[in-house]
Length: 126
Image (cartoon, rainbow, N blue to C red):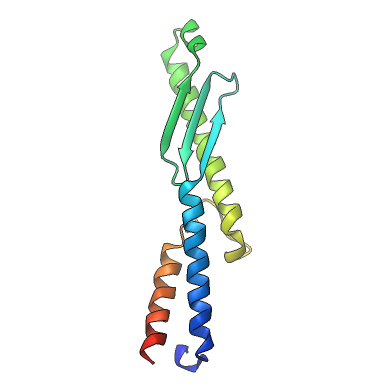
């Protein structure tokens, strides 16, 4: 099918690949932060959901229930991850099918970029 595409299709692939890379760069710099319901725990994650910041208010020491604190930290990190996923999905949703699921979509465009790069290389060989 690619052989039937006009040569201008290759420039379209190049533009789309550039847009995907720009989005990936923006996402790579993005962060998401969430706070526990009581405001004593703050968690920050990067675009990939990796924990990059954790702040515990000194008042957490007033309650010696370490299991409750661990649950609160975990829930707060999960909330930050959900926010990071939501924000990433919002940025890339225009390139995804209408029924795309933010929990399963490739929000980094790795597969799409690999395919675009393959098509660009093929266009250069014609």
